[in-house]
Amino acid sequence: LVLLPETDLEAGRVTAERIREAVEREVYIFKGNELPVTITLGVSTFNTGMDISGCINEADKAMYQGKQRGKNCVVSAKNKRSKKTRLKKACSDG
Image (cartoon, rainbow, N blue to C red):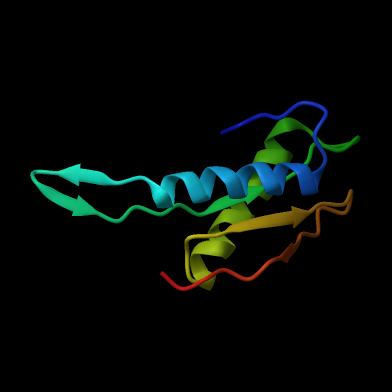
């Protein structure tokens, strides 16, 4: 969980993408073997009328949507007071 105060959805997505790329670029060695590591991240914004649990839930749903789409990506949750979540950005395979 990463909190970015005073950050809109797009800036949060850009930050998450930088984190995803850094993890993917890093070389991880375990017992002498190089292991490829990737992550999938969900991004949400905290809006008036929602509680922190709702915000985390939307980011979590976005992350699982990314895993279903192929992993190794960032998915943004477009949140509204109706709590209907629209997800955007396709994920790459891998």
